[in-house]
Length: 122
Image (cartoon, rainbow, N blue to C red; front, top):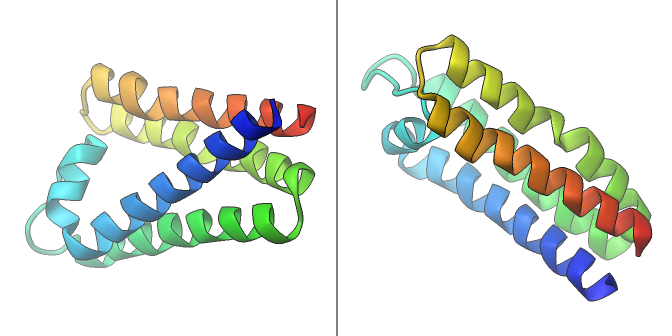
């Protein structure tokens, strides 16, 4: 189970780094994939903030796992699960599709919680 716990945690952390990079490099398409399209002008600062936030959380997760171990990463994942849950509500409240809200964001929250549980058990 330890290999599965670490593998899922690393994959999720790297995925968040990728999402952050996408928001920094291609913000408008990234916003559309998020579920709430951005205007081509005027939203760049907020999209950059999202990219920086996501990228930083991904790197922090990798550092915690490498330097502090499974328990620290598990607590981190437990707290970080709040972000995709919040993203679910943001998409729903701003006219995004339920498929994206639940199929991407809520499913991500579940995956992060599963990762936390596996790490606590490791």
